[in-house]
Structure formats: structure tokens, C-alpha cells
Length: 155
Image 1 (cartoon, rainbow, N blue to C red):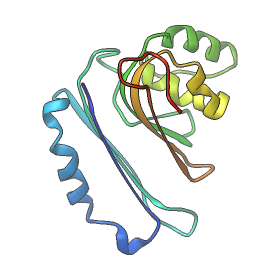
Image 2: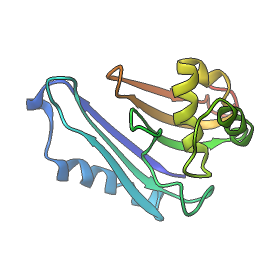
Image 3: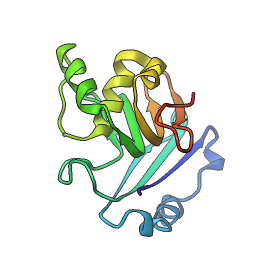
């Protein structure tokens, strides 16, 4: 099971030192010993400060599933724990619509699925998961999880 962590602040005075956020991520090493990653969006006049931290337990796409992961132009970022069981079917559908994939991971399907279908993408995900999506264009954070013991998302 991976470990995911995020921090969002609208005021610069609310942003802790980056090392504090990294230390918080590292408290989850036991949940994801295989890899670690981060996404940092600095606070500027156009939006808030965002930090995504990830500890990975590699199960799908052992080589290419590094997180946080984005779409092609870096406008959609995903932090994810769990599994999307139907990701290959969704990936094929998204490729037919012109999306280009860099990995074989279910995480990238989330990024492109959100890009294509917006929040309606959760209706298509069959799996068990917890995730955060940062939409850079809209400057908004979307949090979602599948209900415990279920394979259908809860919005």
C-alpha cells in the first residue's frame, strides 16, 4: 500500500519549510519502500501553494509508475493509492481520443481520464483507491476515494 500526502495553502505565511513537508512524507516510508516523489507548485499571484508527497509500493508498471504523475502538458497532477481494475480498457478509450501515454500505470489513466471527462471520470473508475488531483488550469484540488470494501467510487 502506497503512502500519499498533500498540503495546500493560500497564504504564503501558512507554508512550512519544504524540508518539514518532506519529513512528513518520509514518516510513510513503511507504506511505500520502493520509491518516493513530490510535486511542488510555488505560491504566486496566480494561485496557491501545493505540495504532493508520495511513497510507493510498486505493483503495476514497476519501472514507469513514479508519482506524482501528470498529463502531457503538466496541467493535471495525480497522487494515487490503490488500483483501477479497468485501467487498460479506459486507456484504450483515451488513446482513441488522442491521449498519449508515457507509462503503463493506472495512475496515468486517472490524469488523462480527468483531463477528458472532468469529475465524471470517477464514474468510470472500477477499483479501490484514494487520490488527489491538482488541476492547474482551474487552480483546484479534487480529492476522491472509493468506499471501504467497495469497487465503485464515492464522490
